[in-house]
Image (cartoon, rainbow, N blue to C red; front, side, top):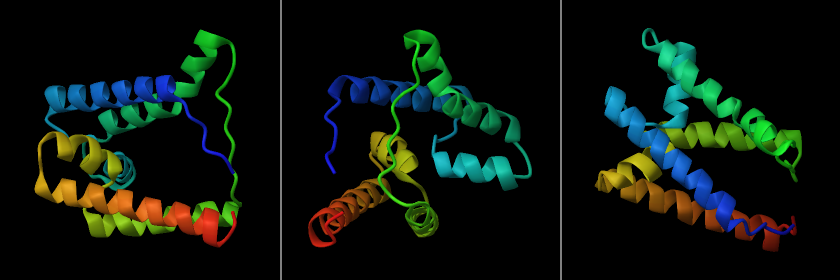
Length: 141
């Protein structure tokens, strides 16, 4: 398995995420944590409209790319459905114990110099590095 090096696409995506997080904070005073937005859209008693609109924007991104370039982005999923489900459950557990996700802590919290978010983001990155090493070099994935 090889990791693609896409600096321009990554930069563009990062700029759009930062812009979206900044606009959400300016307009509504809310932190853009994707899992919190998703759970609020599903189970939240109020304020669902903006959450659903934001999630719709995330989901329709490939359609915008199709309109601009004439093709959908290439998506490769090198793991089984079971591995994705297990990964999703583990992320859900981590988000619960970490009081937020990578977008909430890594983008918004670090921008506010939140100590909790800096520690959480360092934990995410360390865990990710260990996981990639184990999967690629120990398990041979």
